[in-house]
Length: 530
Image (cartoon, rainbow, N blue to C red; front, side, top):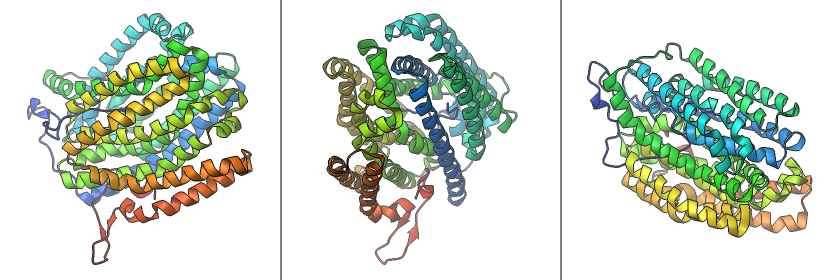
């Protein structure tokens, strides 16, 4: 669980100032805003943090991937994965708003964050504790409504992470504010080792889905302790009414939008569980998790630094627009080949990795890979729009997305099972939400032209890859050697297609006279993912 999150998730409005409503705090409570750091200093911090974040995310996700294979092949079946999917969905929705959005003030507000951190910690702990009490009481009802009565006990244990995460928000966000991703890598590594060890041990002892819950709690305890040690002096409780009011004005719109964003990503799990049952849900959860590999590996690495970076550039619209377009270009360039390969080779990949009993998940995977690509762009747009203060309009975007999605998913699940759910996700996201996000970004000074420039070459390369995969698979077959050959040829074609964008992705503009001129630093991972 990433305690330093601008959640996976979204909000905004153009009329609001780029800096959150700190004026409600008097000068006695919060120091005057300090000038933004020099561009070169910020660029070095962002590049270093992005490098560590990318390494961290790749290592952790590869470990999670390997653990999932072991569990799916030897310990757990589709029904157990379905129960886990329900518990995970409820947990993620609660985590989107467990600290009322006030934790992001640690990252976003100028001045000495330690002056208001005790009030943030108090608010975060209280709200997280109240959420858990409510969930504990409602767990049987929630599990029944989601079609998994057996999930009540798992819910009660797994959602202890809500309280732990609420306490860890302050030290975790201090690490994000300072771009201390090297320390986060160590902490996340310990979380993974402890949490995964507990999960595997209990799974092979026959604990079923409960093994996930206990492992998650153990890992999050490690994260809390690690963040507290890495950011000493930040776990101090305190209360200042004026600070609390200003923090809530800043955080509540973010928390609401984050909850909507997480509901958008997870409402499909609720629909599949309630309409199709645990076994179908298990297949769907596996396919959705596979589709999330590019999102988690690439997008999470960038998002650990993107919000902090965009926040530093919010006062300079031109530089922010350049930074966003190049960050988007790098993310899309790195994600498209993974999405095309996993979507185009869905059935042989799932059979090879997870075994024949998981083959039904393959039918939904191509559509979910398309959804994963859309999610990456939407999440980066979320961070940028929050940084420029567009919280209310982004809140409305998330509400529109959810309102349109729920009836579409319900109808599609009855018509075409988990494949229909996947298709409905893509239709709503691509046909409705992407255009609305483009309008919101345009209001923030980021035109469609910049976004088209960032995506044009990767999309062309993706089309070439898809043609290669679809054309060669029937001829080569689905053996391991054949898959390797198809993937290699497709990646070679993709590389040729995206080569013309290399200067843009590196942050180098070519003036007409032919000399290279470095552009402003970009608040994302682009210079470390060349």
